[in-house]
Image (cartoon, rainbow, N blue to C red):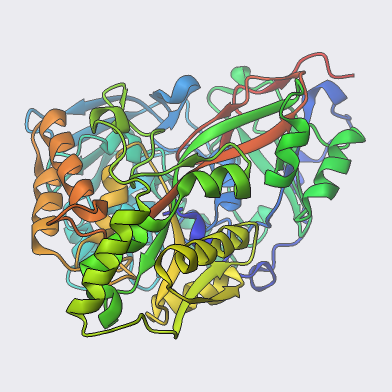
Length: 545
């Protein structure tokens, strides 16, 4: 959920992390880096944490992904390529993975990267005392979930350094996308001696950590992160950039001013500016493996009724949301799993036969009236509160409010909150309805589905359906991609479908698209629909003056 998910981004305050400007001694040099080796990127949010076991926001993940490297990484066209591992053997039952680490892998202080660094990092992230938000992403490993939940020990977690260059991992069951998981920051290695040397100060400034990726962090301030090429990286000859400045500016118009004045080479833009730049050569966009949706708290009697939920889903015109409100290239969502996720080279949405729900105001009214009768009501309650983000999505919330009033006579009060406060309410179940989202950490669609099982800690809406839980359990244990995909398709329809017997447990709204301005001379910067947003390893600024 970066998670991984975007709805918990920046939960940790930057001020609490004491990230301060600090240059790394062994990088000091009098040689100036030429302009055609410097890339400047604008971000809208600050870094929250540089500890790969503890980070929660996408900006921190973007940085960590480019200064560290796991066993694998996402290459061009979102294909897996070798990272710290130069090879992997998979057992016939697909439960045991044996990774061989490359001999030339080094940390930025010239110490070798070993299998012990991976074993230590994974078990540290699982340690209940660490309270890692993303520890669950390691749960496919045998013994991992038990240790993280206090029911087992670190020794029972089946990841083991056989020797310095051999890492053995045993899984609870076959995991078709396990190699994709190893691109995630929680799977990155960490040095035990460095972590223990700095203790609570580890990763709170660039000189209190080491790096094994294409870049290292030179300095961090509240408004800028400076990366420099890592000369100890095993594939340093591929890295063309000498310096990357990631500048933080929350205001979109100011980011665009930086871009237009030549102080930035790349900036993200919001919906209000997409129309103005969409026809220019600098405009580019990326369809994300991300869904925005509406949750209904099913511990509340009104939303426990499936006909009420079906009515709300059918009443919302998703085209209205994306065409008249967002205007940023996002697509109306008639299902949960976004088109950007594929199974064996084909979009999951195509495999599923398209969208699951649509807009049908007449049928919505029929279901709504039926639900009211079942609840013994002559009119809907007037005290329903919907939580909303305090960014451009607040306009989406307003449109939903207006649509539900016009089509169902359902009066909703909006409570627009800062992200952290909103998440606090959701964690405590203090909401009737809430806008939420999920951004894929890796390429497996199961990530969108497994969080709605009854025992999931992320199931804020308290959906509880035994048939759904069985489908997810069967999908995760399926021996083939085809079987797993078939089960996921059934589970998704049961979860969001509006037909009889289907639960309409959440309301899909739209699939997200990110829009950018990027100078024509920026080449080889690979953006990914899931995981970290961009990879700088292959980037260059050819022709920049």
